[in-house]
Image (tube, rainbow, N blue to C red):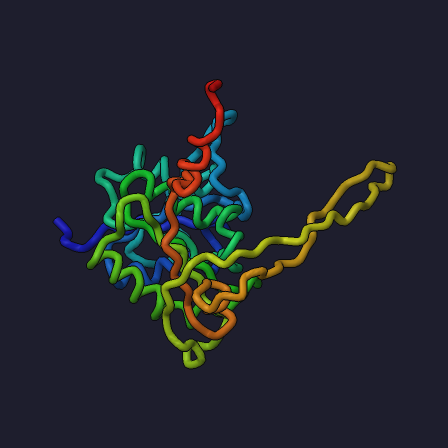
Length: 259
């Protein structure tokens, strides 16, 4: 029986994406790898799950290597659920998601399929990390990510994570020699100023493309966005308990049940 850690690899860009292929190679140097990933792009799906249609899994081979690979018709969160319930014979020691093509820093974590896969694993009690490279290009160079990805994964396997916490890791689009290091950060307060590009079909029917720009409203030097802007890999501990505990006392002062 292998003494290597069992590593579940997920993503949201699809099982053939260069980012996940790089992640698989790094994980093969650490443990026994099982890949369960969408059969096509699922970016921006957040924590969606499939409840109104069927799900399919197919065992495939994309690249040579010792990893086992399964293509799934569902979302990233579906992939985690199916991996745990139908594919694996034991709970994985860690789940790694990515490497995403594009930033999941700051408010982007809310919409991210990459991070939702990590969060789903965390809900199941599995230590989990979402990795993203701040480059949306399909042919982005992921070589500079490898060292940081390996270091952070090995540290999580060695030290574990607090219950209910997963890591959101973002890597600036730089050459490895230009990366300044790894910083533990908080999530920056930022948002998207969104617009819709309205067009018409040849038949006169309106349709829309979502556009917009990312606006960082946070001047702090302890945020993920600051770290990325200054050449550091950012690591943000994220919790899936969304309770605003600081507001409970305030709400209890309201007259919710009469005087």
